[in-house]
Length: 223
Image: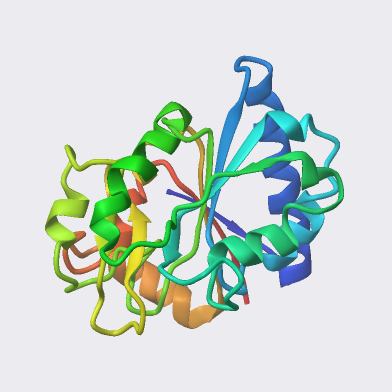
């Protein structure tokens, strides 16, 4: 784990965006298309605001959420909506979004179709993650039903997540997919999150799911 500290969040956003753009540009030298997996929520928004202006061949970049709530794409709870509105604009409007949600009475019924849609994107070229104060990442929550299966090294690419602490069912990339990304970044803010991360390093992934993806990751932190 490599920790990078920043004087403030604005500097973090600029530096991380430039780093991601450089990694995508390098990956595009070797592949016809590249994959970028990013979280929703408020944390990555300022990074997206900078990254979307990067001079890249965005039409060769495929963007997917690290996880998605099972809500319509127009919902303000949709990660795809945030990604579309904050990242897939400016030059990045040419990028292709690969959604992790399809309407279904039972999300497990569409997992195979969704997995087929991202199979050629693996391993992920570049991954950005956040972390909750409960040490969850993507939608891998401690104590949720099915967590052990989603952490397993032989897990399929996607899992349905139904954490009791959250109002919606979710679909998430599993731990081996996240950990297998060629480049991994974690963005956290505040001393509380930093202390949580240090604690997570001492715990098994069953208690701290973020621990499953820390090997070789670059952590970006600002107060």
